[in-house]
Image (cartoon, rainbow, N blue to C red):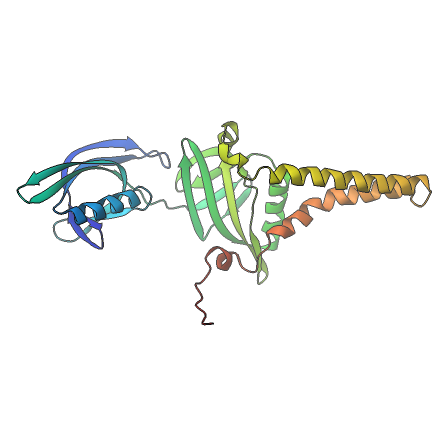
Amino acid sequence: MYLRLQGKEVLAIPEAESTFRSRHTGSDLRRIRVSITARSTQEHKSLLLELKRGEADSISSYDENGEFSGWWLVHDSSFAYVRDGDFPHYHHRVYLDEVEELELERLDIEDLSLHPYFYEEEFDCDDLSIKARVLISPSEDARLRSLIRSGDFFSVVRHGIDEQPREMRFGKTILWSRHNDGFKYEIIMVDRSYDERDRPLARIFQPQTSRMQFMLAANMELLDGLIQALLEKGTLSPEEASSIRKRAEESSWDRMREFFEVKDVDEFLNPQLRITWD
């Protein structure tokens, strides 16, 4: 077999094959061990770089006739140095995991059925995270907002990938934009188990977040004190104060949602490179 590396086809000799279970679909996928020989130090260094990239970005393979035969991720690799006279050889042993193409038919979140025009998912250990972009109608927008606002975990089914429901919640950042008579959203969802693990990255925005929480609490106390002072002076009635607090509570989520509106979700997530001359 040949692997597309360094912009060209590189001979990879299969040595062994086994199977492993896909975490996405539950299907059996191939894991193969191949050997690749680099015949110079420069080839060796370039190959090391390509194999490192291949841990995250899929590598394509081709048969002897040049026909495409699959996508692979590098699972593991090692090499041995052999010197043949004045010519060093580097023998690489590479383990490749077959990559399956995920074809989502429909994404169900409780009773809301969505048909993303962009979809990807990945596992961190056994925790699934989903990233999808959807174009929805005003009625679907109302239902989606009510689900996001609740902050609960929901039954999520990825039809076409896995028919088994998973308990998931929405991510904290949900980008959206207006689009003609509808709305675009970038939806991020994570497994319930995601919240049950200790995550050092959760501290990445500290101490800024804690200080903002302190300042927010201080402002809340200030507003409560102002309302109480107006009550004591008779400027506000108890009913009016209660109404103000109720309206603030009901509209706070919609106000917070405005922070995540962008001109266009796709343009924001895939900005075009612009070259300017000063």
